[in-house]
Amino acid sequence: MILLGSTNANIGFPTGMEILRSGGSALDAVEATIRPVEDNPADRTVGFNGYPNILGDLELDASLMDGRTLESGAVGAMKGVIPAISVARKVMETLPHVLLVGDGADRFAKEMGFESAAELLTPEVIAARETILRQDMSAEEFEALQDTDNLRQWVRLATDPERTYGTVNVIAQDKDGNIACGVSTSGWAWKYPGRLGDSPIIGAGNYADNRYGAAACTGMGEMAIRASTARSIVLYMKMGLTLADACAQAMQDLNELGGSFIGRMNLVALDKDGTPAGYSSMKGKTFIYQTDAMADYVEQERTLVEIEERWG
Ligand code: ASP
Image (spheres, rainbow, N blue to C red):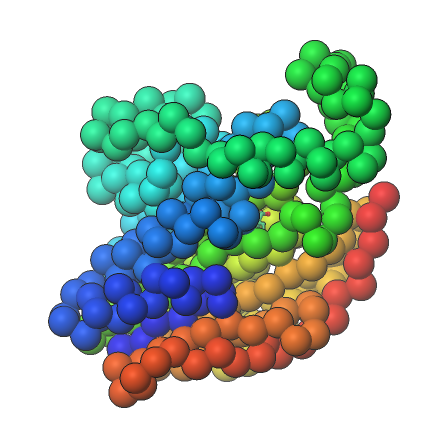
């Protein structure tokens, strides 16, 4: 059995490993590993206290996929509820749908008994938004954001990598060999309201299939949507590529995307035999994993595959 994920998942690893060690399912381990990350106020990219959209509203995206059946659940641009990953699981388990967004996701969460979290942003993050945005706009422009008919001009501020990137990815394989994959994020800081990234899109930021493996992404979600990255990795393994070749090919697909908006990408992936992998378009990025034979998780550098960044 194995648990792997983006490095910011480390806070949830003890709980997730405990579940796997006591014979629990990969699905339970993934959900339980992600929940503490969503609760962590210091993580500005996931759940509670994540950086909000350009108007100051937190919009959460999350998805969960069960590699046994390919059943999936996801929420997108959900405003008032955490843990988003658990709402995604309820979508999977109780509805004939896969993805709920916006008000519908919030409404469903309440129906399922999740408390709406009235204050999902701390005063510190609310103040940080103003400080950061005010580096690029006047006080008048900041005040007028809610009503402007040219909000789109400020989306360029969502391109600063120091401010925007991050998401949690977790993949688990349990003692029965079942695989599950979960992803949760507050998305790009300062994104346009209503923007969905790859995280709630099955096949883009998340995919799991017991027969071949699983993959999940962090980075510029639009690219993973366009290239169907998580599904591509699993499909490449189905077609006979090794885990390493499948990941390298998926990174190459991203590098070959045309158009004007190309940024960073990171992958974590697992093959059906329980081999973990991490890839990044940036040098020095890490991922973590732990097997039942290991007392603690290890942090390992991701394999670098460069992607030429361009914007506009
Ligand atoms: N992939 C996420 C998104 O596009 C953000 C990130 O991982 O940095 O919303």
